[in-house]
Length: 200
Length: 200
DNA sequence: GTCTATATTTTGATAGAC
DNA sequence: GTCTATCAAAATATAGAC
Image (cartoon, rainbow over the protein chains, first blue to last red):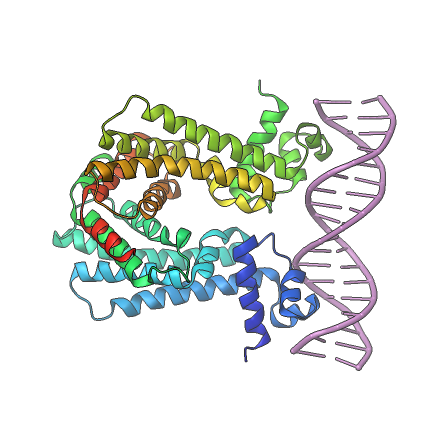
């Protein structure tokens, strides 16, 4: 039996995802929890704090999941493959939370905004380090590391647009699609050659 | 000298992009236009209608630009290359408008929502038709056409995350990066083989 | 076409009883 | 930990003068 705080968080995740943060009111959250809106403030000090809490937990879990999936892997191709699979799997299994983390940054206070952006930077830097290492080893083609990392992370989010948890395509199969696409792109010379030629 | 309606639209585009539709108030728009908020309603019947107008114009221009860029091209590789270039160029040149069109759908009335979603479907179907034709001709590898189209369109949006109009990387160079990446991905067998093997 | 003034609703948040 | 009651502010939109 879930605590009321957990219920509030779950309801907020659902509403923030469906209607957006600013379009969701405290009384709407309370109504779906079966309590009065004043009772929300016993569990959370403000509406913004609910959003912040969701984003904080999501980013921490996302990064922890990535680190766990990379543990023990040394081959750079294996590491990138595992990183992409981890990213895609998490985004498909936590569609609502990752959507909020990606699109509701503007609802945060400046301090909380900075904190979440920093967590996101740390996450992206793990990908960028793998790309950089692969380039240094000569396994991946030389190219702008940041541009590549954004392209990879954005591409992997595509699945969340059309993926339905009750559909017939399993998460692992989708993760493999994007993993193969990314590894091909990184090993291939065409994109990278153009990127490095024009980035200066 | 721009009309007041055009000024209102421009200011709304800027604010909707910076703060989001729900976080932007009519009085804020009016203030930046140098008029009182009541005066807004002489030009637009409601706040939602400003958003709808922006999305409508953006989607129409996006599709018209794509059709113009495809005109006269018959080779399927040329057509896909031109389509990707058109998509990327438009998104970099109209960053604010396309961001709003992609992320502020929830502010629309149900009727207007349907209309915009339909326009978006029509746009996506142009890409899907090219992919399908390329597969039939044997130029592209067989795969789920919808999954491919979402992957392509999402990937091409990545540029808008980091692109700064006053940066030193020209729009055409970026468009070429994504064009090459997509054409490689479509011609290659790996991604497509996995996609078609698991999609059933 | 723009103004002042205002109607109406809703919001996030607080006080204090139980 | 949840309630009732309420505050103060802000929102969208309208009416009518100029």
